[in-house]
Length: 468
Image 1 (cartoon, rainbow, N blue to C red):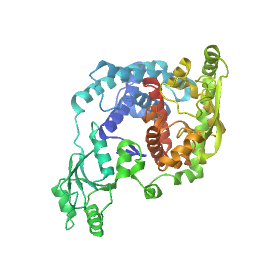
Image 2: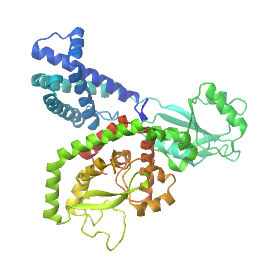
Image 3: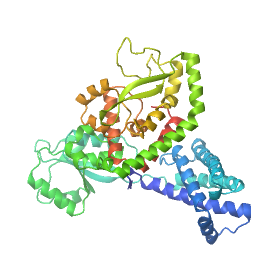
Image 4: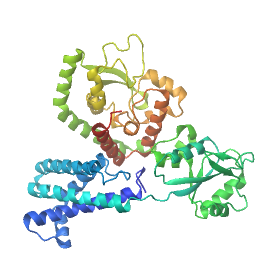
């Protein structure tokens, strides 16, 4: 199932729906225990009608914290204590957050006693549900079979990518190619056969194929195109490599798509809609304002630590390229020694860069060094979500070596982004290429829903993983 460009499998959907039901039922049960109300369908409906805002807050907060702590990973074994602990921590943090939220919004709230009982009851119910899910429902689902038309590098990439996944949604069974020299050979361990130009649909049925993926057009002729069209009319889903790869990986394979993919695909036109632009800008201003206010004490402590351990200056200012490659000055807390590039000139920072101070390593891992960029967001130089801003020196190199690199400048750079939450820290041409693939996915699929998802994954990355 695809929602706003994000693929969610059926098991994740089931977890989401049941979790929502548990949270709602927990509210009615808490009212029943604390206030002596009936625990009936009528009572549940009445609580929903009279406390709609408080109930919606409870649902959203719980689902977000469960996501942050990776409780929607369908591979976790919830019979293990450490994974049940994830659920418990997520529910406790949800209860604490709701207590603060209800204090600030007393008209949309439940009492503290109800929140406490609700937290305990939801924690117990989610634990039982997750154990049941692992024991009974967490079974392997058969992947849908697919034939790839075109035994070329793109087909190999897709086959190898799917084979590396634990539970792929597609399983390639064969390659089909019109070129006679390829018939009877193998690619990525799979057979390559010639197409039946008399009845391609029958051939697909005989091969027990459910999907057709177009990966390579070399050697095509009009007969093959007509047969693929007839197969589509006969009910076989047909998709191009770029579409499929993007859906299963969350990135665009820039080395295997052409200009037409971006010309006719989604994205880009959304950026020209003034209402959408204003909505995204309001999203940025609101988050940046709240972030600046809340982070003042932490920024002061960080500045003091830099003075004590590394001396002056506190801030690091450097020119970066923003939207449409317009330069701006980016601010960060200084994490390197003074004059770090005086001897070497512009140089990518690596994970074990000797120029980074001991305090700087901590600031980078925790991303505290990025806090001054909230001012860049408020000024409009940056967005909260988007590709990371890059320097002119490296842009000039990468634009010549990586296809479609300039497309990343069609949106404002961001504090965090789809690439940052999906790919570890890297500083090379290969890393830049892989991050661009994630960035182009974001640019094509960007939405408020995707922005909220990236923010949640950013919190997840900071709390549970090494910063990237």
